[in-house]
Length: 169
Image (cartoon, rainbow, N blue to C red):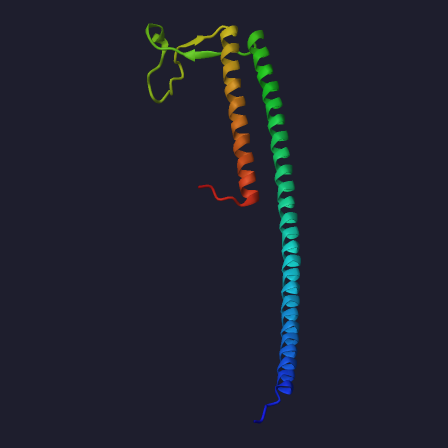
């Protein structure tokens, strides 16, 4: 009987297997290296984009902060001017330089001219005493201060909204 010589065949198969294994390893190493390179490129791109966006947001923040400081300074100046004007008015009321009166109706208004052409030029009026005038002036001043503060809040809100381009719902 003739026995086939399987050793050379096994050696060829073993060499082919080792060569294939080695080639496959080289191919996988190349794929892994390409993935590492792509990941590093994406990480660098993301880091650059993050730095750019962060710089833009910091610039916007700085601009909004500066605008808010300007709004606060304007409010402080407006309040100071209003207080000075209100104090001057109160001094004039207390000294009698300014008299405060209100229109009246009823039996005392006999001198009132009711014609539309005159525009109530001769309407009867009652003069307030200085203490009542000062109290009404203080109430009006508090209301004006509150209005100024609310307007400053609205201006600050609009500044931030416009700076960051936020859409209000």
